[in-house]
Image (cartoon, rainbow, N blue to C red; front, side):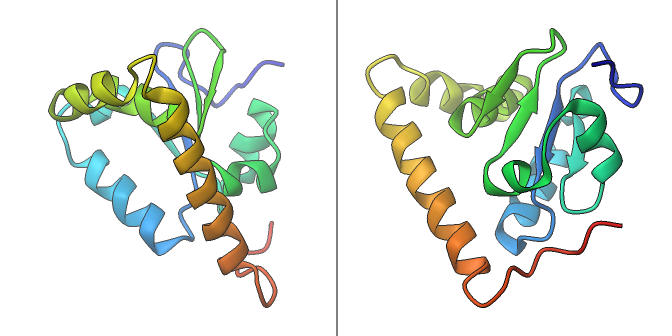
Length: 132
């Protein structure tokens, strides 16, 4: 599928902009040198870009997703590692958490946190903005 909205020379990160914690973290990253090398998409609002990328909204809201310029996907910790590779200030963290022996543990911790965060937000009916 061709994504007419994508910049083919840089990765695209899909994040939950309706989550205060997620939005705050992404705002922090976007202020850093290197952030301009990433296309940032708020999955809670930009359903057109989600559809063009072939990513369903619920999946995008549950986990951080990044589509590399090559078209390959990184999800969860892998998406963070992709972000950190583009931000000089965080490259060291990406190298440490990406270590072969450490990565599976950190990925499980991220997945557990992401599941908890999503359940907590949707306990009494999900507070995600409605699709337009």
